[in-house]
Image (tube, rainbow, N blue to C red; front, side, top):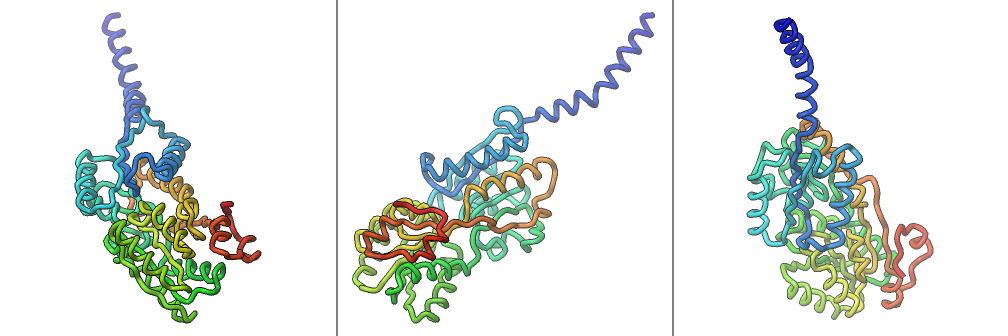
Amino acid sequence: MSTRREFITLLGAAAAWPFAARAQESRQVRLVGIFYNYGRADDPVTTAEIGAFKEALWRLGWSEGRNVRFEEHLNPPDSATRRKLAKELVAIKPDVILTSSTPATTAVFAETRTIPVVFVSVSDPVGSGFAVSLSHPDGNVTGFTNFEATIGQKWLELLTEIAPHIRRVRVIFNPETAVNGGNYFFQPIEIAARKLQIEAVALHARSAGDIEHAIVAAAELSDAAVIAIPDISMFLHRDLVASLTMRHRLPLASGSTDFVRVGGLIAYDMDRLDQARRAASYVDRILKGERPGDLPIQGPVKFTLAINLKTAKALGLEVPPALLARADAMIE
C-alpha cells in the first residue's frame, strides 16, 4: 500500500509539473526599459505619452508589479549625459527598451545589438543605420517613425496659407540634435520655398541664447516667419521660442502641437499618444517571443492640425475659413 501511494503521489506530481512550470513562467516579471525624449520628469507631454504606452500594455495583459516592471530614464539634451544614461539602462539588461527620438535611439543602439529596441518619433531609421529596410529591419531595432522629410513642405504651406504676406522663412533647429544636422527637413523646405519665391535660411541654435539671437535677427525683417523643427532641443525650449516669436510678431509654424499650446501660431503634427499606444503592441509581441527585426517599421496614421486663434488675432492675421474647417484643435 505504501509503495502504491508513493507511486500515485509521484505520478500526480509529474503530471502537475508542466502546469506548475507554466504558471511560474506566466508569473515571471519582465523588465521594460524606457528611454524617453524629454528631459523633465514633470513635463506633462512626457507623462501623457508614457502613460498612454503603459495603459496600452495593461490592456494587452501586462500589469505593473505583477508581470512587468519599468525602468525609466529621461533623455537629456546634452549628448554626454545621454550616452551615460543609455549605457546604464542597457547594463541592467531589460527584456526590451522603448526609445523616443533619434538621439535617444542612437545612444541605446550604440550600446547594444542584442536587446530589442522599439522606437517612436524617429524620422529616418534606415538613414540613421537602425534598420536595413522599413519592411524588414533585420536587427534588434524596430518601431514607428514620425515624419517623412517632405512634411517640412507642409509646414511652409500652412504658413503661407495663414500668412500670405511672408517672403522670408527662418528655419530654427539645433544641428546637434536635429535629424541629419537639420538638413533632413530643411532641404525640402528650401526646395518648396524656392518655388514660392520665398527665401529660406537655416538658423542654428544650440542654446537659449542662440535662439534669442536668431529670432531677434529674424524680427528685423518685415515679411518673415519662423519654422521650428521639433527636435529635442527645440522642444525643451518651446516656451522660449513661442514667447519670442509672439513678442516680435513673427508667425511660428512647427511639427509639434505643443508649440501651439504655448503660443505658437500653427502646427501639423502626428498623434503622439496614438504612436505610444502602437509601440506597446510591438513591445507586447516581442515579450511574447517575436523578433524585432521581423516587425516592419511603421509610419504615423493620425495627424493633427492645430491653430492658436489668440496668437493669430494678436498678429493681425485672419485665419481662412477653409483652414479653420480642416483644423483638429483650435486654441482661443
